[in-house]
Length: 541
Image 1 (cartoon, helix red, strand yellow):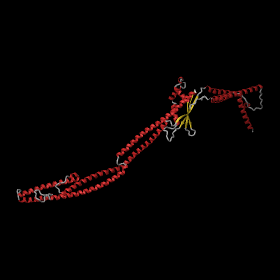
Image 2 (cartoon, rainbow, N blue to C red):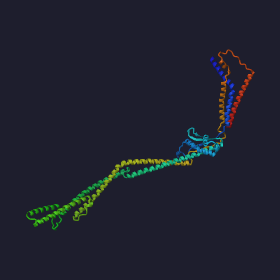
Image 3 (cartoon, rainbow, N blue to C red):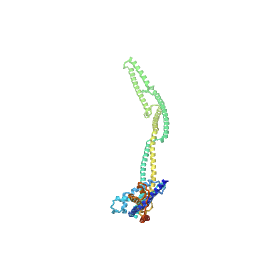
Image 4 (cartoon, rainbow, N blue to C red):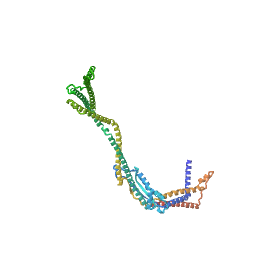
């Protein structure tokens, strides 16, 4: 219980100390407070005013639905605004506006062109307005600060026109650039497609007849040619058998004719037209000559006649041998070449001539059929080669067709994109795409944006509070006097046995009342001044 009382007494003594400090230092606090506030607030009336003109530009969406006409440029509004801001706030553009409107003192201002441009950049502010739900940029504000409100409004209007015109120009240029790029790509794709088409056409021309699409017809033609070849070979074999028969028949007819041919002296007898008969007669004549020579001399008439007969038979034998050789050679030529058969021998009998004519026709038939068979074999080999080469041809043609299909798909895709881009470009030229519209015209500021005197009043109050606390605390810190019983008791080494009450004279009471009155009066003056300054600043703003 005693500890609680001690703590309560301690808190009362501390509160008394604070009250004592306030009583002693209220003037040291109020005067710096008032001076600090007065300096800051007065500075707001000395600083040159700056007027800020603001306009709002609405970002309107395209009037045409995107499912009908898709834009062919970037739809990032923020990036486009930042890009235009960088371009429009360039030194060239701002210098032109400065010279046109004679801003920042014009030629009378000794500042350099770069300094004026930098000053104008600081006076311009572009702020984006976003949709609170989608966070999309729906509008943006352009502000410009100047000493003259009319100049601020004029420059803001100029900047607004630049942004709107630049947006239309940039969108149209980007759209036309996209269309031009797609047209160039489409032309390249058209050339590539033409080259692929020419390759396919050239390949099909070089492999005419052995294309995969002609495989069925090639097989059908090959089957027909093979059947025709078999038929021609059968007919050729038949013709060769016929030739053998006709040759045998003609030889028989010639042998029969030679047996009945008359002799050279006109006597009808069996003439030795046969080589074997001549050789037999020659052998008999030689035997007869040997018998006569054994009995008679060479001048004997019978010997001379036999010798003449032997000479005649030897000559006839030689002629028969030569004729046989010529006949054999002619027959061989007739077998190889139908033209070597020659004309029909008129010395032959009518049946032999007919047989020789049939043999000649047969030889021509054999020659023609052999030629047809050779042609058929060449054609069959050609079609078999086509069928054998069709897998490789099919693979090569598939590769060419695959490249052609890719080129065709690329061309069709670029053609579609080019057409859509041309529609989007037409929409941009008609200004039916996304565009900037001035929602609020540039305002004519009636009150300055800087300095905000009400804010300066609050700032001055804060500065004065800090300054007053610093000054009052400094005086209190440097004061080494004792102002309370607690401080005196804290300095005594022994406990206080008794206390002498304070004796206050009427003069001290009067002085104390006067000090309190001055303090309250100073407090009233300070706070009334603060209140009046705040009200005046508010009303003026």
